[in-house]
Image 1 (cartoon, helix red, strand yellow):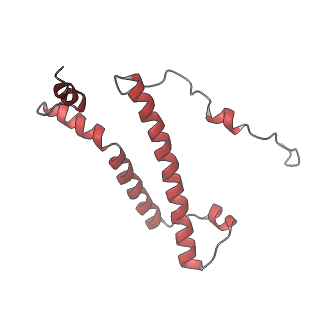
Image 2 (image 1 turned 180 degrees about the vertical axis):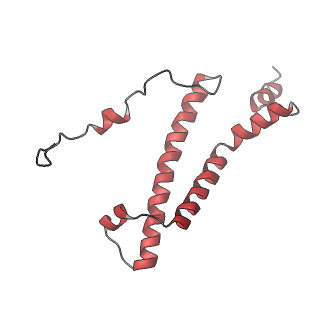
Length: 125
């Protein structure tokens, strides 16, 4: 393939809205809760990317004193730095999903009501 041929521009809006193949996996019983979780996780993903970019800028400023957009785009963290980023990402997701984890653990133990059960009790249902 010739590199001289111009590629058509990507339709990023269409690509972002493209449906994956196969059935959508559902994890929660309530479809509305599933949609809210999906939106929250998309926002969390965007924030994580922003956090990595900020980390890259901080690292480049600290080590070089100045930076260019090209340096930001080309930055590859050291193995130790990549491990630190990975740990941050795992902790970040654990904080976001904490309520789901706690409810799953309580349900396994059978000793605590879920938030839905507690809410129903408060409403006298």
